[in-house]
View 1 (spheres, one colour):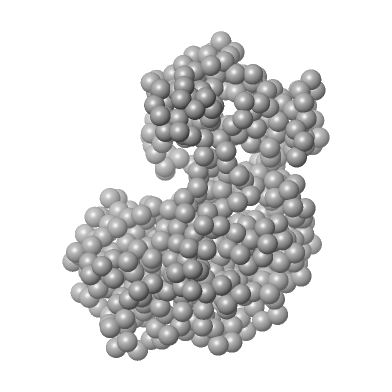
View 2 (cartoon, chains in turn cyan, purple; view 1 turned 60 degrees about the vertical axis):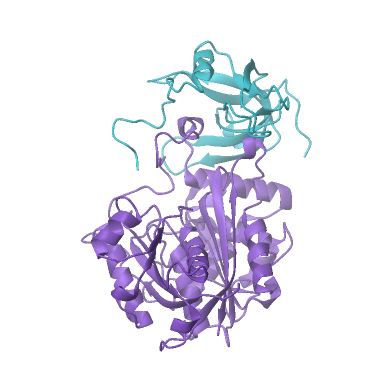
Length: 139
Length: 387
């Protein structure tokens, strides 16, 4: 049930735990959090490390590069659109939109890199685009 | 399960579009049906279980509406798998002496309310920490399951034709169910020719959107044996919760890989012993993954297991969802776990339609996948035995 006055497609920039991500997004920078204890990155960003359960993970600017782990082309309404699970270069898999000139040519393992798409309301939203300079992931 | 509890009442609400019924009313009407089926009275109920479909403050609101006098209540919310966990929790609660007769209810009316169940973003709680990492990307249920299906195809060579066979089997069962929303048998070609919703899932890979409800009565063996209906014992249970694991999520493996073996071990049986399986069928791919993860076939072999009528009662490898399932019969309130349990009870009572009844059905497995694959889900398994 959607709560009145709340648009779930607009990220909450006032959430204290994740505010820096959206501030960076407004500057076109893509952040991940890395744990000071186990040194791993994770997705989605949170203060307590989901791997080792220690508080105090820290933001770092990430490569913004990855490969398509899986994807779908939604065709039921309007222009086809792509939702994908991106395997980031740093390790974690992240749900995200993919924009491509040739969406019919998308494949699993294809290299992609992040961009930010302006939204009518709220901060710019990450999207991934095919990146011919990236390295294809062997299965 | 020591001191196994028994399912003694089961009722599927006949409506599939509840334009003139409220959610609370659906719950109460289903409860009346299950009590009549069991031969018990409302005053016998001292334990109550419901999930997120219940109106208001869950058991508090529903118990007030139905004027139940309770000494135990629980509202475990595993989406559509909730009711399978509720059966297990009711059995555990009864074994612990905290109640004697447990009522479990479901009711929902997404069809009357015009909810675009699978294709529009849905949010249950604005404060959920995951919302801002999914909804801005226009994540929806059907897209997530389509991503899972594509990954399974990539890893194991599963085909759209194989997935279509799951729908074909459901449709062959549904033609014998007068209450089923979709009663016409379909072919693999029909499924593949249906509109592509979210590539690679077609319209006929998706379950129906239906209103309705259901209820179950679970009680202790000493009470069950004095009732008129055949007794269905709960002899094993398991549950498993799976999230994205901080970004380590495996798209093609479900919690059934843990909940299934737990339940089977508790019951002391193997997949090959199971006469009938009620498997969650929000989408065709959901069924295929459960068959693999529950151990009915090797991981990756689900496509070959379901192909060529593998799930058709009587002629296939395993009788699955003989009421037509969520794919053809009913998926009340977007939650398929209750109807999976109800048809398993019919099978174990030998009261399924004769055309789909498994001969001498003694042992059934019911599994639910609630929430969503691709983000976070719960798998709940129970093993049921005819006494």
